[in-house]
Image 1 (tube, rainbow, N blue to C red):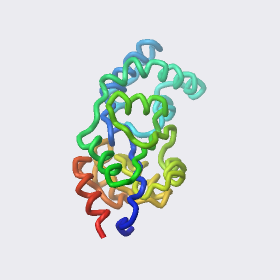
Image 2 (cartoon, rainbow, N blue to C red):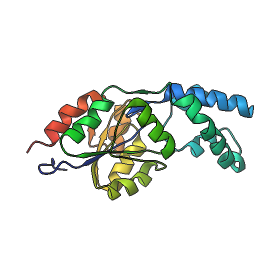
Image 3 (tube, rainbow, N blue to C red):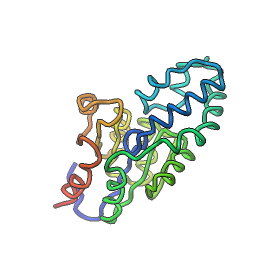
Image 4 (tube, rainbow, N blue to C red):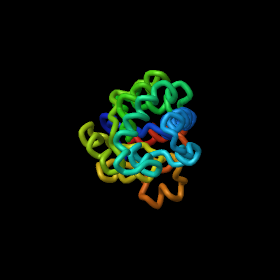
Length: 208
């Protein structure tokens, strides 16, 4: 894909392990949830593979017929346990600013429940133009196309597939469960070490 030389495009960002390190918060929420349900959940294992939807993860720990109910139960606990311990990853705020300062729009497209994603953004003082939740992998293309995203930034092979499905450039960062080799094998167009490299890449991408 060629660089954008006119009006800067919309850039989509994944949330967990792309913009924020939610592992401490999710671990705390899972431990409270496990205590409430009396069901063992290996919270360390869960936070090592963040990305897919909550229902998919809870299916590892609960019978299929309980998953929907357990999702609701976990989400009721989430704000009290998961927001405060979560922090922004290095370069996250600056990446959003870089897009907006150039006249572009920065949106967040995540598999996370949208209300909780917005709570994270407010708590961390990150101010995207829109937050769209409840979309995973190829499903993210729905929002990316709606907002005209030319670039999608994520940490998971599912994010790479979402970008491809939307016809957007896939920019990946190995700050989550997928390493550089996995991201490149999945088809990532660009892999940066982390978002502290985003502004320099963005400036170069926009240069004729």
